[in-house]
Image (tube, rainbow, N blue to C red; front, side, top):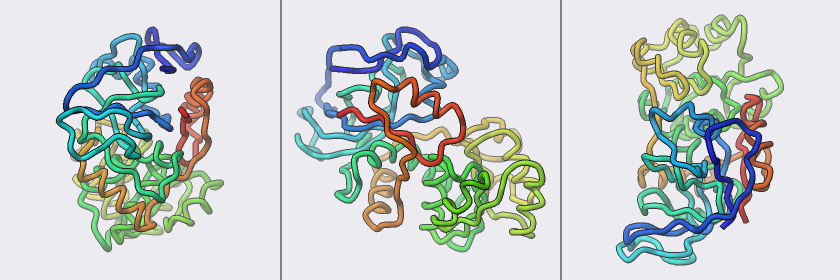
Length: 307
């Protein structure tokens, strides 16, 4: 199969397509012929070795945890899926080795769900990681109907889906973004404000009593600003800054559950969740996709097309 496999830790250069044997699967697993995956900041951080203490790598290492495609083989113990089923999911193992930047991937059945018919292949490839992050972050700070939620980096891949999931729960959303992304955010029902100097004052004008909850998808001073704006620390969650725990907040490093995947599928089917695509790259241009992701100026999701 064709795959981007890293021979060692490093940067974007040298991310070339190679031929590798298909991964083997066991009785409780399925083999998926992938159509799309997506590029997330965690991919190039993993590829650079920044996460080695948390998720060690085994080389050659195929990155990528977002998976969308068609089941090609089914293990004997799998009962919920059949050959030919279209699925999407989040496939992460304790050791990074067989990722989704490839034509095939092996997944345990709890890592995948049936793809909604209304979800196109690019959006399916970009849904799982960002969508699970949105759901689990909002769960961590107990977001409910009537809450005012502050979302930092609201126009990014995680931010865009967090805005939509929060709105689907009946929350009011204030989203930080550059001025060029304000109309984009407003289309999803968020109230956009510009980040940078003066952010705290801008938040206070929109939410004088403070946001009920805050989601940090970028790091930096987002946690401190959220608390200074009046958000109770226990209702501040970060996916970018583990130090949030030292300030009384929550840190989320997501995992996959069938229930959360079904939640995402239901939101898509109900028309309350879409996956905006910033750009789709062929596998051969993975290095370009990583550079775009590292720029920090992506609106929506970056997708890799594998078939």
